[in-house]
Image 1 (cartoon, rainbow, N blue to C red):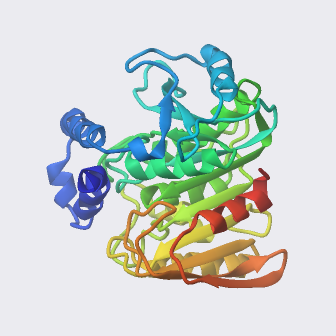
Image 2 (cartoon, helix red, strand yellow):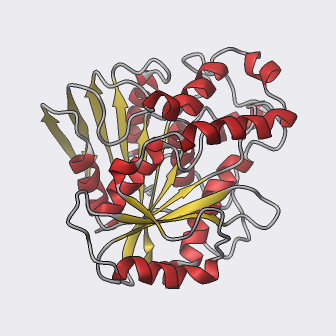
Amino acid sequence: MVMLTLWPELVADTLTAFKGGVEVFYSPLMRPLLLLLAAASLSAADTSKLNIRELAKPGEKVEAVRVPALAAEAYASSPAVKMPTPVHRLSDVPFLGADRLEKLDLYFPSGPVRKDRPAVVFIHGGGFTGGDKAEYRSASVSADLCRAGYVVVSCNYMLGAKSAPGIWPQNISDCRNAVRWVRAHAKELGVNPEKIGVAGGSAGGYLALMVGLSDDKSGPGGEPTAKFSAKVSAVIDLYGVVNFSKHGKGDVPGVPASEQNSYLPELQCDAQDPAVLILHGTADTTVDIAQSDDMAKALRAAKTPYEYVVVEGAPHTFDLHPNGKSWKRTGVIDGAEVSSASNKPELAEVTLTFLARTIGK
């Protein structure tokens, strides 16, 4: 089951490692087939242990206007004795317009109704060509954060071969629009619009960094006339691709040479940016950990607050409960050096501590 869950991410990342190979394999006509295969693998994923309860029936159309009532239903439910405490998911909510197939999932915690809960937008990985908002890793991280009291939004975005027209920067724009959607519907969601963070894994880590560090008006995928801001107050990067010009990743396809730098997160950070938490495993053979090393160095040089957690022995594509041995944390917070370590690989506590400090709880 686990191998099926990881299939979209691993296949996508493997294919993109072959320069030109994915361009031959992938075409717009094949997108429905790829999505069907991904959906088939995801349907086989065993998420029962996450104790996620659906607020709508499979295939039921859910518009934003219904969100308040469904959210109230989630908050009103009494936590069951069975552990872990249940979270409530409203799946496949449209957020990009009637002409787009990509949707988002909303996660609501059990507990009292609040008007000021912090929120986190989670962005799935998959080499920019595959993956889904409901993959096991996305569901697991979303459930963990939701269980801690956060409203979580797991979003899909434009997928396609890296050189296919219309992919870049639409993928970044879609993720920015997920943040805008949360801010626009903050009242219905019971969310404080000033307490929104963004997180993502692998390709999603890159997209989270771009949403958090590059300008939401003038940066790639930015919208100068947008009614709502896409700015966030915290960024969590799980083993993200951060530099396409090094470590065998190449330039961003279809982007003019003069614009390449604007697509590199390590060149977008400054002292006014939100704090960043980087999580990466030493056994990652898909995204070189040197990329996160570079990102951490760039954040330090730019005086952007950050924490960098290196998980000994952890591979690619983990949630907050990775297979590994231990972790070490370094960084700079409020101008002061930070350092800590754990003899266990568990990342939930260090992640939740970061979020509590940056967007509250």
